[in-house]
Image (cartoon, rainbow, N blue to C red; front, side, top):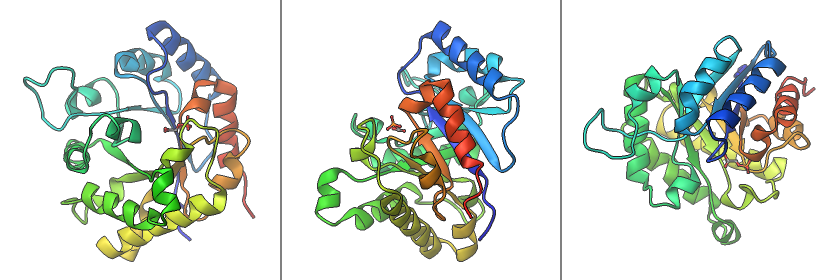
Length: 257
Ligand code: PGA
């Protein structure tokens, strides 16, 4: 099995004003003077907090990402931020197609345009996918996820696919305290890798990082991260509590065998 770096990513969602974000960033920087080998740590604050958080974590081994991006470079797109703007504020990653944004109307075509723009600009896209409870109960999880992946990656070249991170986030597990079991999460992440294998190659499928998200916390992280096809976590609620986030990072560092 290839040694993929485990990415532990905090999605702060719409939490923390500028002062609160500065405090949380300071606490994380203090708690993480270094991160274990083989683990990468990322925080994705609200856009308004990005510059402040960048200043606070500059000396720490913590990467910075945005929660959304727009595909156009500049112009009359009120309320949006371009890839280059995010990069100029210190971001190297960007979450794209989170289910909470899809629920506000973001389409697969939007997600695809954002993924292509991020790759073109040199931002690492974390492309989210996930099924509803109804879809899971109807037995169409694999087909649904495969469709989201194919549409989201449409036009992504063979050379760029390895820079895409895919986050599997079952909608029924987000913010509900109801985590997918490690087996359920592994099964879907394995299927995602198989979809990438079919679209690209075995080599690319082995190289790509797939995260799990949905009520991951300090208690369940170890078992989830021990699964062979889970290469990290996209963490909402628990990323707002420094002790819990650090515990998850420690769980990523534990030998599984
Ligand atoms: P949660 O959110 O950890 O609070 O469930 C995860 C996410 O939506 O990225």
